[in-house]
Image (cartoon, rainbow, N blue to C red; front, side, top):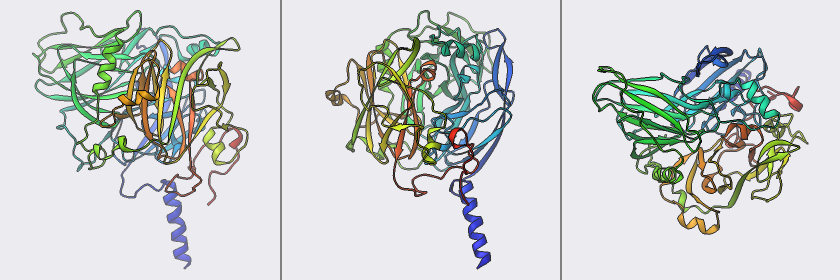
Length: 541
């Protein structure tokens, strides 16, 4: 009996260490050292954030259900965290890597993330979530391939490229942070990068072959348009959803978003411009790279191909054309269309309105009039250890209040397994981009003007794309449906990074009274503890 008891205890500990991940799912191990280093993306020296000496950081390659063991050593002189844009952290918001869920890694220390890419496929990215570090680098691509027996709705491409695009400042992130902390807005960015380069980024292709480009906008605020001279792009996947295969000559990628496109090298063999330009800005920022044929007869030539600049309708119509491929498999063999989201009654409507203004003479941004201020303890830890006074459930309304901006640690509660409608309302003159951690949601509608219940008459209840980051056009609204099937504390944020930094975010506490492992994993044994959670035990044996 003693032997059996010992075995059982060891088995339980082992299971808890891997968060009850299925034994047959493979493990992939990563060791990352995060350092400062000199980078020159726009031709001037800057202090960048490197991972294993790389800017951008290394790609993560994985397959559905893989367990990713990522040991991050912080060699910076300040606390650091990495978050995983679009990775759902099923039942495990402790690993989300934002300050509301996870204690920062102190300088000179390490933390090992244990993630499972459960029931996911597609193109995503990781980024540093604290202290405006994102303006210094520390980001990289994540790809989750389908399991071998799950059909993919297009032939294997000849190559698969990560293409990270984003606006960029010549100033170091510390200087930008001082500007924001002083209550100022940031100016227009200085340029645009493609894979960390202000010019000269190259993708190599062979004539006649087709390639997959995983394009992510990892920038700080600007929507960007991506195009390749004389080549068409076929959109095939958006943030984990296989889409109807629609062909475009250029593609708007709003900040925080990820797309997969197929490009066939079907032109005469030479070099062609890859162009990325800012949308809805004056002046328009533009950068170029090169699509290089292996048998190229010459360098790029002709004018740099133009793209849309300030046209909202063009972008809105493109967005509406990107829809789910209902017959294709997702991470499982069953068709994506087998989940009939449009036939489920919503149980709650949450309306979220953005605003900008001054608080105590300093620039702030808000959601439903609340400008988020971080607590002294990650909210998820305060919740787990039942520490009073860190946050108050209901500290943000689920509809616009129309009042002035005020500061609070805003947490909205929602019921586990509720099916909710969320409407993002943008009364401002800029394009916004919103992200929900822990989930993929259906983008059922977007239009100009004020949202009303009658707006539901134009919702797409059949094949709306499911994704995790969505744009909201100026003086417009975007509506999503989401099944709240993932217990945890989840960040809802503007991807416009200065706005996020100055309060345009909150946490959605998806709550159940159940303590079953089926609903939520326990706190990781290696969880860092900080603030008022310091000195607590992560988990009794």
